[in-house]
Image (cartoon, rainbow, N blue to C red; front, side, top):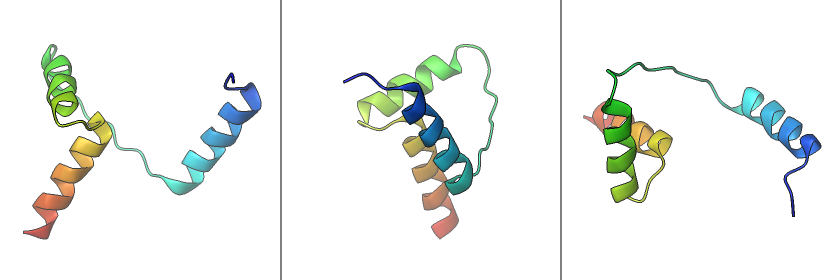
Length: 59
């Protein structure tokens, strides 16, 4: 089944209410490396970064 415009809008509204956004900047070429590394861990880039932050903050 296709992802309808209404579903996209509902998801966007939910994400806006439930999550904060943080933008990071990396040197050209690093994004590709980060994506590949996260893939090797079977994680999304977001999950990979959030896990790193959580682990660091537990110290």
